[in-house]
Image (cartoon, rainbow, N blue to C red; front, side):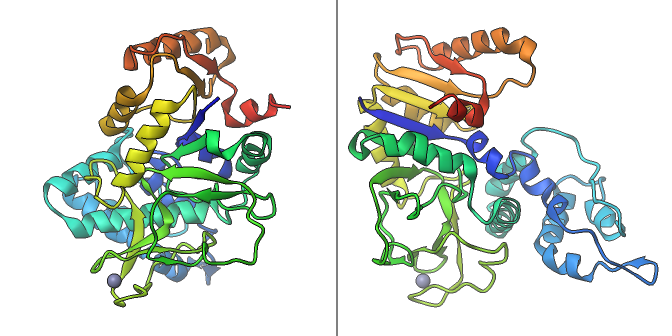
Length: 344
Ligand SMILES: [Zn+2]
């Protein structure tokens, strides 16, 4: 039986990865309490650590005048910075769309850098128990040739784990590989892990497009001053953000994902909701899933009383999205951790 596991942000949540609007706006909430010296908050270290965040607030002030984000940040003293912003779910997404329309590459680069910094600060070191259980309870019980993983997450929480005896084939060619060349490990079975939006530990050179793969044990300012192994130009995390054109570099990954989805007997979707803004992903599934495939959905249900209603609405949603699929979707509302706990 050929099986594809699809990992969305909800799968990385138990590992501490921030979601949606928290990604950029709640960045500072990871910080340590500010030291007080002579009765005054000493913000020097925090201002240094969050200098990219302040840059982002400058950008946000230009886009939504009247909020005074920078003023609020500069006057925060020792209080937790909570910007007075409209709690619209995809605020950052909207910002990115506007930056894209204006051709503001530097602004996009800044947001990309912040997303990296925040997830690294919140979800590292990458030793996540949930993904550990996913490896031991699911992957290692299956044949690598029949099992593949599609991930929309940038974080490397699911990574080569030589202690657990598993490795991954990312189906992309790295020009410079800090991890793959290390022969000192017993690798164990190798499963395809297709990261369709890129990954933090993949670094792309802004000048020659040399693609690097670094160790996933990174600090949040890891890319500051990072240089290309070939031409010494700056390297940034290779992550594709919504509305961006998928570059030719990532296309082979999408082709491989199409092939895997077409052949799948079962597709298990964990913590991913097919948001409307990501039409490309909806299309990928709509055009690839066969009529006989069994879809399993692993999601959370915040209130127990709503379980039945949530199940019905998810079944309806999947029927509407993928009308060619004959079988009714299987719904598990216990979240990723609950789903793994039920597997003996
Ligand atoms: Zn280069």
